Length: 200
Image 1 (cartoon, rainbow, N blue to C red):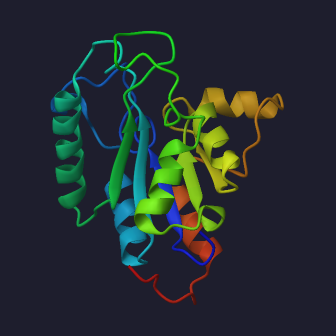
Image 2 (tube, one colour):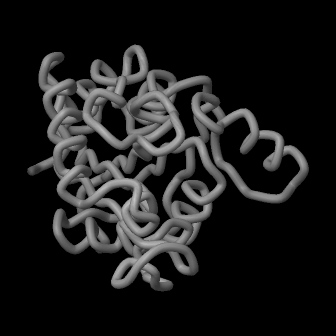
């Protein structure tokens, strides 16, 4: 959507909250230090802020979509404590080979496919080519590249391993930073301090 809003797409596990092997309860979710304040900065600039997350634990039977809803309620609460919010949380509960029906299918929403980004483009009027994808994994970078967004790799979560893949030339990344805090600072610098606040 040319002329649409700038979006910032943020991976969940390892980028926004601490990485652990399949978060299954709200108590497992711990925000990375500074993450909420960083999201608040995006809110203050009027940028569309969207969480995109592969959650194949649903397909594998580790948790239900109801469990995931409670985890995301906790995420929203934790952000809200510091005056931050997100416009949408999109997740993919599928896995192409593992798990149980109806979740074991080769969907269009599982990163590296850009289905969640394209859904946000439609729902929120986002111009994907002007937007940013922030994450710690190869699939985050590939999903961003698929729609022409600027890809920003953070070194939290699986980021250090992903950076090694980048160095070997296996994947393309536009920017590498230590954390979501640096990613947001880079985004705000890039869009320019003089730019008018985005229209909601």
